[in-house]
Amino acid sequence: METPESLTIDYVDSHARLRGDEVELVLCGLEGAADATTLVLSGGGPTVTARTEAGTGLVRARTPRAGLVDGQWSIALDGVQVDARLLVQGARPLVLLLGVEGPPSVVPKARPVVPTPSLTRRVVRRLRRVVRR
Image (cartoon, rainbow, N blue to C red; front, side, top):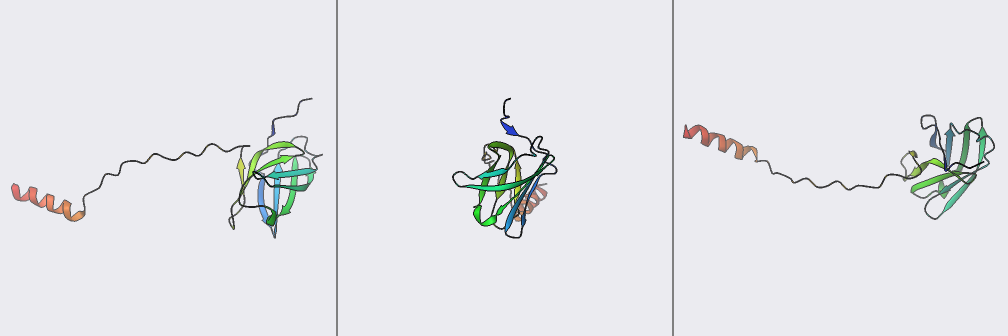
């Protein structure tokens, strides 16, 4: 039997939140995840491992917030990637991002700024037109 490339979660019911000094991840909609024992968060170098509590289609894991530096963390359950990422950004709320990888960043092209005449300049133009008539 082949293992899936990534585990798909229910994005509506799944969430991440702070519980005191701990980060709690709740992943819902995982078929066959009742036997999951380990959740691994990878942040481009450091990894954090957490034990899981698994039920029917639900996996819950907690880990200390102090172990997670700011940035995006990929999520794996028993070595299989989860189709979501965890965003940690200082004192802001935790965010569960969609997808294994985010889309590439795009810097918008600068639009030319057309200076608008000041009110005084517009009034002077209008007065000149009136006087010329």
